[in-house]
Image (cartoon, rainbow, N blue to C red; front, side):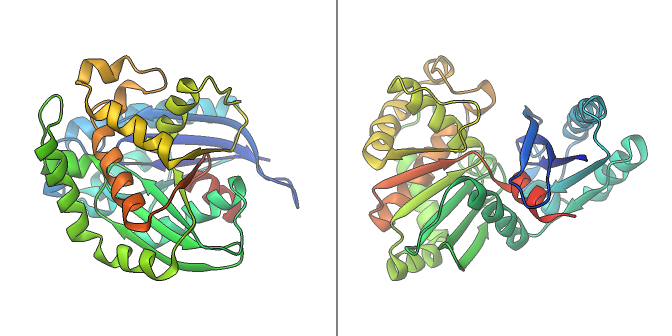
Length: 305
């Protein structure tokens, strides 16, 4: 039986068509990401604009068609930061239900973290040593500290790259002073995370979702590494990240847009993601990273009936 999960992110909507054979790993049939920018122009005011709603309806209409063509019997959609914080969320969810018959479950940040970890566990083998999962979205960033057997700590921060971009606009290219301002903004709000990192000393940063998808693709291209379509993870070093960060932050928008592996819809927000990752690596002295292809939607697929 084929089912579909749709992750309604603040920047992108993400479709997963899958089968879940009894006692077997998740079988991905089709995965697709499309930019929607649901939070654009209203996220800091707690509103979804009419234009953003229309973009969302158009993408969900396309996803419903794809799902039907794949023989999907059940479509489930999960709303995250933009939808859980907007005052007019019901206007969008009611319209989607009325026009497309797709029920949307808006989940709290804690549950989002649980689903992300459930996805990551299918892609990256955890060990007895604590690892820190970081999932950078447009509206929020989720952090999860876990081992192979335990979830040790989790938190969701409304510090996604779209929120940061609206709070702290930057020049083109970004200046060193602007980088420092973003870093200070993050440091001020991530004190609890830094204390957890200091206490448990995670040996590894596992990155999932959009910004990390792009980083893995860029680093793979830079190092002439073949990243197979069915690869669920890709390791790289903090040294490789540092070199890439320094290069990308010195580029203007046009130069970033020409970087292989970086999609157009992440060109403007990537500097914020780079700074956020750098702050976390610096706080923990973490030297190894792994990209996880699986995140919220794969976690939801593994857990829902």
